Length: 368
Image (tube, rainbow, N blue to C red; front, side):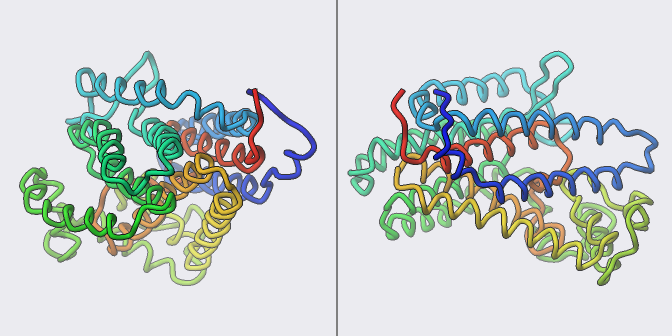
């Protein structure tokens, strides 16, 4: 299971790891700025602990031959569905966050769907690997559809449309890179568009308001549109160089709701300006480029497809979060990887990096 030698060490992607560490340190700085006027360092401390735990997970997972995860794909898939069933029965969060998506075990409160996203990537990558020769046969596509439907439907039931959209996105990306003919992607898009009227009437009022606010930002500036309006004010007021660290007016006077989590990007741009925002985007570009490079250099379908799924998950999170804070996409409550506060989310991000590094180091595979 564990393997380490000189050859694999040479394949360790230090640039990827350094980019992740820089992103995480920047996230700690921004969480500090977003919470400095509360007089408490609790969120910074919890984020620091999550970072340390996450880095340990990165090092441990990078030493494990990723093929070992493939051998466990059925148990991983079963656990993912079971934990979502547990959330449906005993979860909470409707009153606090509008969805029953959280579990509490002792002092720990976490969102299981974050773990489930990684579990789906691992199990689906292995499922695709097992059926790579018949990926375009209708019966195989039906089996894949039946395989991924239960976790997606359970997440939609919470309801957590944002997470479900992320999952659908990286599943489509994984299937496409595994050799699925484009016409099947077209059929899926057509079916999704045809189902939009039905899905629309199943949305809660607050979810519908997010689309209305996206189309007409000024329709309810003091209500459902308040968050995006204040975010855009903060971003615009940062100009080129920003107001200065810990000196953002919108940030420090608490005009930006959820500024330490989903809307942390406006904190960065208001205080560090356009240059700070571009520095973050450049870091993300380097980060995503290294992921793509590992996926392209991996001939094994399981490893390559798994990295593609992880890349797709990160790409969607980054694009949606940055775009929604600037009013370019509807608000979905999707956090910014390595930057937004959230211990579970950060640890999951680090686990993904550990898996990617393992693929990069052990992509020829070892017998064990």
